[in-house]
Length: 64
Length: 323
Image (tube, rainbow over all chains, first blue to last red; front, top):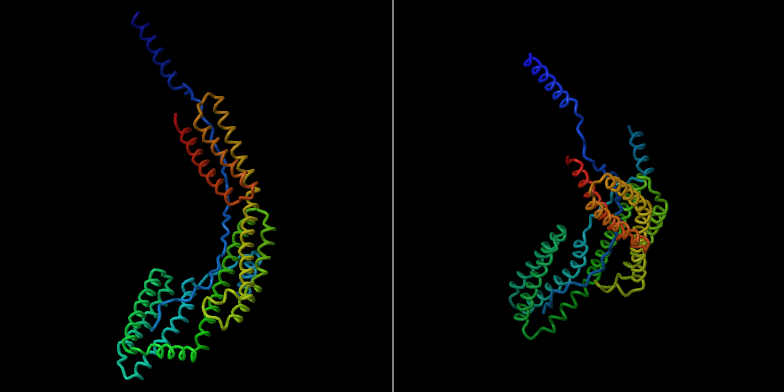
């Protein structure tokens, strides 16, 4: 008789343990939210033209 | 089919999309044109000396050889200019100097005490070819003008492309467009003033044109155009910064809210907050530069802020992944 009671109690314990682990809601640690947005800088490159000067005459030395 | 093509062209013109201009004449090719006039001056002088040596009944074969070397190097010089190879160009010039020095030594050996007469012969030959030589200098100036016009058109089209892209992104580019039109309005005057200078300098040798009033007019307009482009650049940067700075401040403010909320949840965000403060400082510096009119510097600071902000976002994202 005692054995039967013990088996029933054991079965209840096993069922309860299984129910606990199955239905347990995991507790979540606090999390940081996502940082969104973007510092957007469009293409703004305007190049400045440069115009060359007339060069100095080539000097290769005297012929005589 | 034809009408469809015309429609496409009309649409491209209407939307301001133009084919990018190319600068097909490089700086060395212009320099070569000027140098070529001087090279021809040397060639004519060499031929005059060779002729004089022959008149004296002396041996001109070595001089002929040097002259042929010289003209061959002139051809190499043109190839270096066409390849835009400054190193090869300068090396060839050095070789030409050596050939001229060798020629001079040999010429002195052959003419002996008659160097004055040899010089007179050179002068006479150059005088006889004066029109040809000055014509070459004028050709070089015409070529220079062509490159300047290409440069003008290239930067004009490039600026137009930037303006159109920004307009498509919703920026108000009316002031920049007006400035670009003002610059474009100076194109004809720029060409005119170059033509006038070339004409006024038709009897001036390479490098002797700068002091003329016509050249001074050219320099004045050229500098004005460069200044106009700088003003256009600043105008575009200002237009962009007017929008970008407040947007950046808003993005940082939202990021600050996120970190503050995290802090109230008990999360340690000390590192992230320090980084965000550094980014905010960059944006504040950019704002100060903007207020001072240093637009280029303001943009550069904002670019640093943008990059740091991207890093911060990645770091926060990585932390979110941790359990």
